[in-house]
Image (cartoon, rainbow, N blue to C red; front, side, top):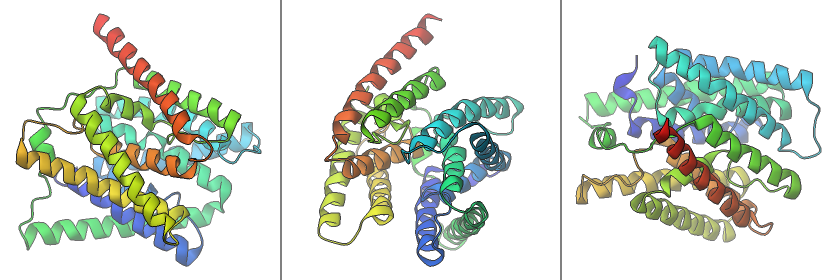
Length: 330
């Protein structure tokens, strides 16, 4: 339905504008509208398919009710998120496959980016007043969608800007595939949950190390991704150390720099050698992975966060290779 605006440029703009709107809403209303990335990801989901976006919101209600009925509050603040994430992962992906088969949306690797969106929203309802959060999600999502649509319309009709540069260049060169994605992401999520229960350290944003593992399988994407994490992490640490940027502000800073880095590298590589694909064709998933890893590394540096990320990352690589071999055999 919105194929013309379903581009790398527009979806990343949505992520940036959504983060700003969520941060501003938190400062003015005192409520986080689901999460910093929720408005942007919800707009992206609606662009991919309105039915898909609505379904993710509906599933958030189901997850919230299910958790309230069958689980108790934990002494560890992130335990509910791990439980909700597992349920969300194994619920969302089958729905995505169904919608793809019905022609309601086109399933892609980046569709996995929204697999935890219902869990993030449901988790925010456990921590804050549900109606206020829901109102915030509605306001910030409408604001984000409106600004994105305005930018697209003005840029296309008045300034003759091209908002679809990256994807056409890589469309025939995408070489990344997550075979048995629920298996790969599920094992990583379970391992992260186990480490969290033992150490209270969130090591790598729940499932993103599966995406990182896929990027590390190719030299160019491995260097580009690791260099980005190092650069964004160092700059974020330096800025945070000599300023008052902490918490959600730091997360937003990491998000902004991650988007700029990934976008910049892609455009630079296109200018130098259009046959190269620096991030194996991933769009939002590579950005989310970089944001999560850098933020968790900064947040849990003294508690050994990087050590745990490395451990899960190695397991994710083994699982990725194993899944590919099984897929090749069968």
